[in-house]
Amino acid sequence: MTAPDAVPLTVPELTSPDVTVTVIVYNDAARLPRAVASALRQTHADIEVIISDDHSTDDTPAVARALAAQDPRVLHLRLPENSGGCSAPRNRALEVARAPYLMFLDSDDELPENAVELLLAAHREREVDFVMGAVERVRVDTGRRSRWMAHLVAERRTVEGIEAEPGLLFEHLSTSKMYARSFLDRHALRFPEGIHYEDQLFSAQAYCLAKSFTILPEPVYRWYIAPYAAADAASISNQRHRLSNVRDRVHVQRLIDAFLAESGHESLREDKDYKFLKHDFRMYAGDLPYRDEEWLSAFAAEVTPYLDTLAPGAFARLPRPERVVLQLVRDGRFAEARWAARGLGHAVAPRETTADGTGLYWGAVAPETDAARRELDVTDLELDSRPFPSALFRHEIRSVAPGPGLTLDLAVRTYDPGLRLPVGPQRASVVLAPGRRRLTAAFRLDPVRPGVFEGRVRLDLGAARLPVHGFGGVRHPLLRLHHQDLTNTGVLLAPLTFPVLRATAHGGTLPHALTVEPEGRGAGRLQVRWTPVGPAARLLPPLARRLSSPRLRRAARLVRGALR
Image (cartoon, rainbow, N blue to C red; front, side, top):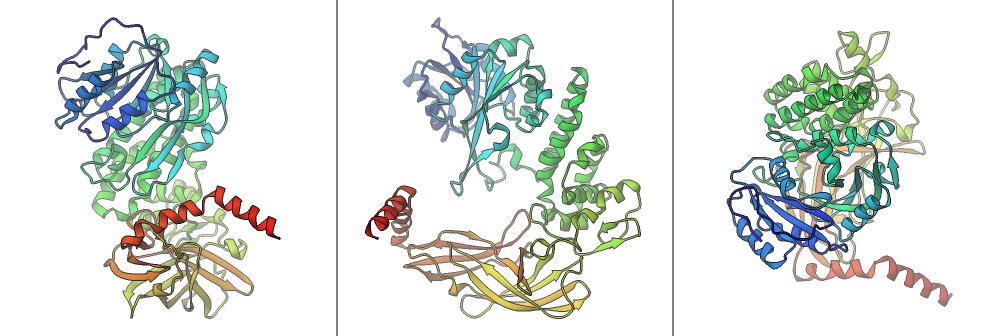
């Protein structure tokens, strides 16, 4: 059944389905059938599917009409004009949805086959306002699968109000949940229109208004992630390079703050502020090394006034490296903020520190304010006292140059702000492991001044021992320090930009396209990529994966045991 370019949609008199799944779409004709098919093949089939089209200008309307013609459970709703967001198409579908339970699906994602059955059973087992489950994330470039906020949904339970588990504010997706229609109507809860990051406000309101909700550990949503999509096709959350994106995030946070105050939930403010710092700001922090001074200045102007309103306890809950980045941004020390951001998540030391008798601070300049001294004090990193295997150093590649054959010549500098290394030359090696085979290049780091060492190393990528069936993947070299009988292995930072190096390498039984490039995100490490090429590349890796399946490995072990 279809609807013209107007709302409301005329729906025939049918028996009400158990669940309405709303699929929102805009200019996504290619992926819409996959999303709708995932809803239609649910193990609980008594559903209706509303395709809510935000006035697409491609072939989406025709595709939606065809899908509706193929299955009477599918309705097609087309908004009369584009709203520019997710809220309006969801709200328009809510106006015509007939089921007592509601779910939302984006056109580029899918529902696991038993998602409706699991969520609906939990609703029927116990009367709650909504039920939420795990979200499976799938990288479209690598196929890698992971769980979104897995620790929050690790076990089944019913939560009697968000105050009992405020950490759940981190799980702000509206698509991972099935809502009781009566709950949404009782509180007139709808998606806020005209803003981005609407899920964050909607979910915060749902959490606060719900008397109880049930959590399931099973996956109920499959979220496809395309981190390297073209800028014009990237999702809102992947458009962090736009200052309007920063502005939108901050605006939504202020709306959430106002709702918490108005609804009597101010006790959640520190937890919500911590979530903003740990999740939202952290996403931008990882990009800071790649932003220029002008962008960073504008970014600071957007976020600093809001940071000044956050609960001090939220900052205190962060790891020290994240607190350092935040404070450097607030102080306008943008060059240092970029360097500090490169270490996030990788246990990287500062290049240097400053002591003033009361503390040990990040960088070459002592902080001027009490707040900056509190946030930039890195005493708790124990730079001078950690056991050597876990000591913090900073290793940077100063230059990358092609050598003869498949070799790379690297100039490396190591910073030792805790003065953990003894006086004199240091034994070091660069380690790279394509597949399970380790390639090691030993070299010497010579002292330049106290706490700084430099050396040169030639890494022969042609000597890498690849699996017989070849290796397709990315590896980032590590630097290993050797001291007496101990070793310390740390991330090796590379120049953020350098000419990409390409060659053909032979390993195992296959030729490989070999690419050496900047990582282009996060810490900015040296990135080495192997890609099997040639006709056999399409046959051997899949065959090897099948032969190395857990079932076949267990069978091989049983055979070996029987022959002993």
